[in-house]
Amino acid sequence: MSETLTIIGPSGSTAAVSSNALNVLMKSDFQKAVEDGDAYSWSSLTYDPDANDTILAVENNSATRDLYIQEIHIQTDAAGQHVVFTASGDTMTGTAVTGTNLNRNSSNAAPATAKCDETDNAEQGATYPTRFYTGLLANDGSICYTVNGSIILPNDHHIAVDLTSAATAANVTIIGYFKDR
Amino acid sequence: MAQYAESAYIRGSNGSIAEVDDTLLRINPITEFQQAVLDGRAYSWCGLNENQDVGDTLLVVENNSTEHLLCIQRIVISISAAGGGVCPVFTASGVTVAGSTSVVGTNLNRNSGQTCAGLCTSVTEETGNGEAASSWPNKCYMPQVQNTIPYIIEVNGAIRLPYDHLVGVDSIEEPTSEAVTIIGYFEPL
Image 1 (cartoon, one colour):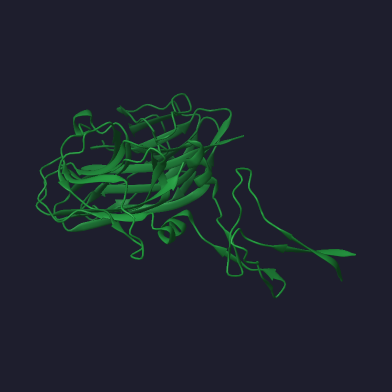
Image 2 (spheres, rainbow over the protein chains, first blue to last red; image 1 turned 30 degrees about the horizontal axis):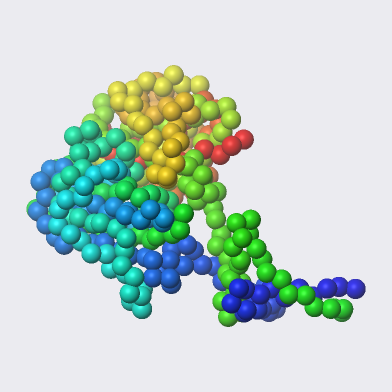
């Protein structure tokens, strides 16, 4: 004698079995966040940074949700080193960057503060004590770090990107999503 | 033949119930690395503004824990050298690590109060290992890194270092500047 077990979700849908295999759908936290309207892109417009200027910083302002970083894109027209770092407790100062919700069906706004040319953090003066990535780029070089949610920022913590040499045109894009703690 | 039918939810220890989208059971595979990040056991070690001497190792991370493996997830190598150069990625053991600048690991989960102090030693311009002199007998990768173009190696935990073993990155050419990032996590034995 055997028993039949039907797997149902909280919405009442029933999982199917086809060709003797349970049908499943792989959905990452990032994909789920996009679906729920909790994933955003923050992109700086091109600007002319001095050495050690912060091109873009994104701070989590939610006390109940963590900010998970998915991708970091860096472009510069001048050869030099870039630093991806974190800090906390700063008063974010600079040119406001509004996060773009990746799900255009959603009207959610990001509980975050993002600034281009952010000037309040003092990490460069302390030689960037909490670094995630460092690298070198050539003239007109670019890099994408796909971190897949492996950087987690709680309330009042931010992620930022500096160039340690002056450039005349630089851009940074950070993709991230919010998830309940 | 089924004798009777039963419906069931799949409920996690936190009370969350697995969703079924249309007829598809939703799953979210978690890697060992992702779990380590959530647990606060994953770190980044980055060199900064380095200009190594001939024969120095660009960056080394050694496991000092007898209770954990140090698993390497990702290595990013940048060098500034005309024409680029080969950058051996190697392992060694029993080395008295010596270098110009200590590197403090950054916990990837900023919710975590954990640090890797006492769990590892990391330095740039490491001079204690003699691997280059013996042509890196325990080399894992020999990438040709182009001038100022970061080379990313997705190791995905496939290098696993027990106590007193290290991972290091050399450059056969002498770059004028370099930056190496190593991402890794501690896995309890």
